Image 1 (cartoon, rainbow, N blue to C red):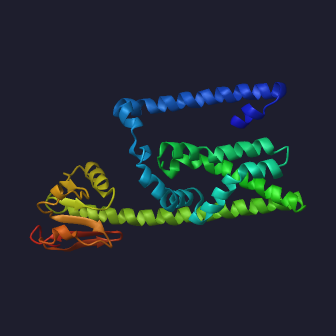
Image 2: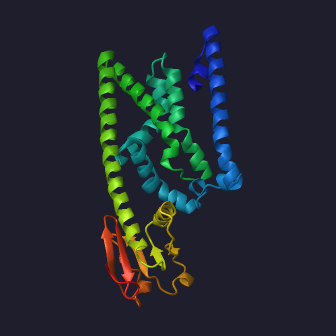
Length: 293
């Protein structure tokens, strides 16, 4: 749409600009209609105060940006963290490359692709936030367009045939697409296996008396609450991984830990033994809490 508005020329360009503006207004109106129920139910302050896009402490933000956020986000968007540095190099050298090597006919499109791929970077740096990778999926398309134009510029510089450059670009694109499809199939299969383990652990806990449960696996307390609501059964008192000294009092009847975790040291006075294990989860139960199956 932006390309039509910027690049459209003459009478046909004016018609395209009008169509793009109408389409943009329609998309904006539809987005507003879809967000209205969410805003009314949760309240606009809570919706706008999304913890996923909350400003982080500067020291934490800069310490985690390159070692953690960039590799995780690049892996989500492109499939491999190793592509992060070439991608950052392509974006950083974009203006010089466009100005020096881009064909005059493709130069406006190259500038638009560069701006589209780079758009969220200044914003997240200025705000000090780490938005989830799924919210910037739109940058993949302009990044791939920019990569294709760069490949064509390299082929022209080497005076190779244009058809060979486009054939190579097509082969690389199809190869990457096939890799991503296979990768997603494997990810979905692993997710289904994990979900089956989560359900088995939830059923195991549901068969025991509703007593205090300590959960250190991120998000599993929400999963248990969701399953309890779906199956219309009472939810046991759940406690997240609170590390405050005041929270380290009393005892817990069951511990839901990761498969490589052991009961916390501050629970050492109480004796726990493995009660259930499946996939990424391991459930410990306190001796005397309930008989083992």
